Image (tube, rainbow, N blue to C red; front, side, top):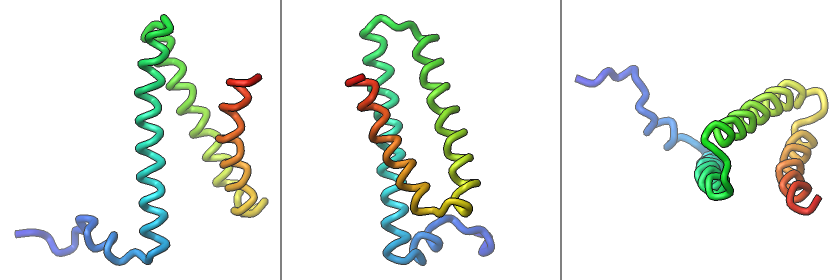
Length: 103
């Protein structure tokens, strides 16, 4: 018999508002994009001649950097404002690749 006190997620998702569902869908799409990009980037770097250790190190350092930046932004969002932190975070993720490609 199922335990009535254990939430399997169905109830929680069904009680989200429209905005909550949009945020959840955006998060799912973002995580899919990151995961897909990591696979494609690893395959691309492999074709360029990078070995597995170098590719793994690059992806690991990218995740560590993202974690550090996310932690800093989330702990300072109340001080500087959530909207400015979101704008800075979003623009840095857009501008960074452009600087590497065109710099």
